[in-house]
Image 1 (tube, rainbow, N blue to C red):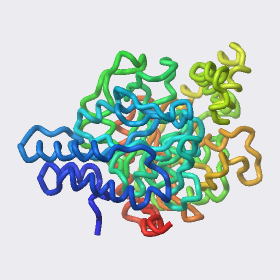
Image 2 (cartoon, helix red, strand yellow):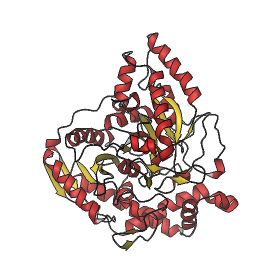
Image 3 (tube, one colour):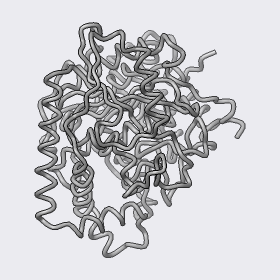
Image 4 (tube, rainbow, N blue to C red):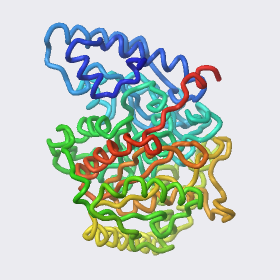
Length: 479
């Protein structure tokens, strides 16, 4: 029998409003699931159950009194430990902040509370979000719910695992080179990377950085869309912020997939993708391609310079954020932060100018492709999850990866076009681990991309080979 913590966010909120379930009962179910399985995967790393139960009882009283209820009223929400939470430990996965308890929420968190969400737990992340393997020296590693000794991806790994294991109905995340999408793909949940400015972020060290975005994670596209509508807004503190679209608060519209022309790419023309994953992608595509008007194998007009351009831009942002820390507190920093910051210090102004010009070219080339097609579908990850005690994948099909970031290219190559992207579960791979696909569209097409993903999700759910996989909770409880 389905436990309350396994309900979708939308169903749980509907049942709370109809007085069929209590916010207290829902929260207690989430806490019980956390206590049962979190010890096996280490997804939830900080919490305040006592305060949350007080808030849940207040939410219950408001329901019974007939008060006006927010869209998230009574729903427990977990927050990635890169977002600032009042009264709840916020470490950024760094020893520098291992005892940090902020006094105020950042904007995205305050929006969740204002909408009635109960912010009660923080999810694990690599130090300052650097790296797609969720491990740090404060809390240790987070394991994949389908194999706890394997990586869950990152940097929103804790959120993905908490969702997959039914610890929470909603969780927040963020994405630069794939931090929402990679763990969503590895854990069988939904991660949505919005266009820059849809979800304002007033905390970035470099305001003029369109690559780092906040976004929602959930077990379904509809639930992810619900959370997006809450954290989306207009905020002058983010220079990319745009006027809020009230339609983001509405249920997703029905999209007729049979009229869509879809571009399909195994590797975006530049990403390393294991042969076994290519085969899985082709098999999955063959099972659902018939629902579209047409599918065509097409890569964006990318080239090998994309990798260097991405690394230059990313590294210079690390210099802005971490140079002083590197100079004064190096011993407290992890290898990924050190590597990226030192890499950035070696680049010249000419290197940065070249990288920005290349990124602009890739952005425009992606737009050219999207003038011919409605969306692009590609694999979320180029490999299956690897052991989490291995910091990164250093070899794919016998090819050595030149940097620790190269295996992330199926995601970061899309980042260079700053598109809207949804990672959608699509069954399991050749090793029985979750397999995900990315549905992407041009910057600003967020609502359309979500609607397409929502429609395709319903198609995939009808086929056991493409339906969202669910971890063995009994195995997690017993490990």
